[in-house]
Length: 165
Image 1: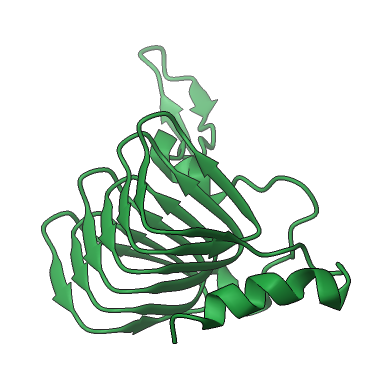
Image 2: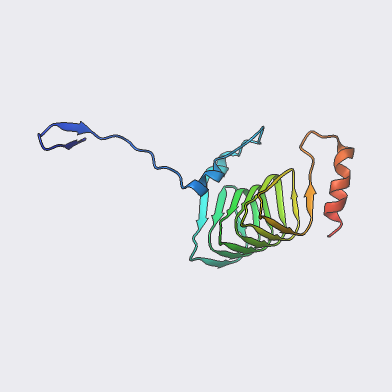
């Protein structure tokens, strides 16, 4: 298949890959020896900016929220709360990127990134955290040691994490 020019010659069509939205590239970024996602984690879900949802979500894939969610997110690979989005509930995921406002606790097995527009009212439990200038945490930040660390070194973090229960 081709495109005909004025002179009748056919030019081949070039396949152009769609460029990811600049903010969406956060889903593809991995640094360091990250745990590879499972086969079911290739799915991607989006809650649009006009959407208001009440209820808990469970996914093994990636989730981006640009609207408003009132509920808990469980078992996600990557969760992105976009700039201007809001959430009330806890997040349980491997990687979490916050650009909006969340009222609830964040439990990330690997990494949390708080962008300059992020406001977190709740505790953050993770191995690695990046807080950009302007990002706010109104709560505790509890660091979990990387997997493979000795059991006794992680005992203090586990005691702190369970002290609120």
